[in-house]
Length: 400
Image (cartoon, rainbow, N blue to C red):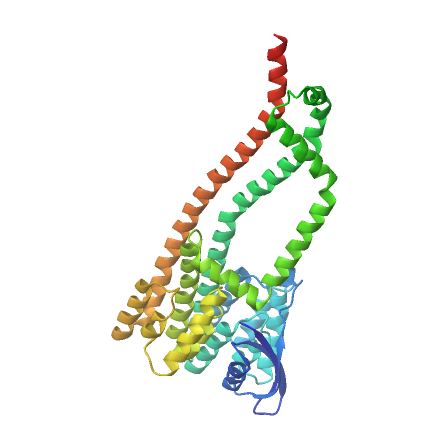
């Protein structure tokens, strides 16, 4: 969903700035007013790039929220707890944000309001749960819930990256070895094959290999430029809203990665929506906030439509039935949970089961990809070796 940057004033007339993630300007203005702010200006904000190494990781946030929960549960005042946790993150963006939050809270701002001044560090999900905790007087429990959310997101992300790292390494090494043979190894044999080529005794597979190697050496610069240009064009396109939406739609509909992508998105949806409703966040607002956590723009757009149906008075299960990407099994569980008034418990329990199933799917996909890549790479290198050695063996046989 697009990000909007706003300038607004609070009830005391103090001007503040921030960002919200919304489907359109109307939704963005509605979110700003929900924060008890009066909008002054609103503009579309392009996502910032090039700040990758300064991002706040989920592990840092999990440690931060868990530490705050423990300190508050021990009876320590909020300002002192913020000071201690900030000291543990002195050299990070998170530490600087916590110090600023402490200053704002000491000046009389609510904790949730102070956290909203750092949208690049604390998500709207976090600030909403903290706001509920302040209103209910259960701030330490809310921080504990946030810590668990961040830990789950971090573990899931690490699992996905770990499962794809080795296949990516194999693919990269295969490309490097193949290019090395074409550009450096094959030319060594060319003088040996010239006489055989003049006699017409060179095997077809070797002729194709030599021609491909010569073409690669002659046109490597234009080919490399074309690949780089195409990569840049594709990357820039897929950074746009339309490009991301198309990729995310393909992920959900793909027969190969579709089941895994759906389970990943539903795991995040169930965990986030369950935590928000358990914390006391109203259902409509919880659905809107959960759209940011699913990690799939196509599914987020479907959830936005479901949110409108819930606003119109329809049950969540019926609203989710119109989302083609969400399995009937999930909507049936939601329907039963709504009838028994145990939606939050069901969602959190479902999130755990989906997470376990996601791990199994990742393992299965990894076990399928690794031998497939090894077979393809071994076959390609084997063909190259056969193409090089076949003329030599033929010549040796002719001499005998």
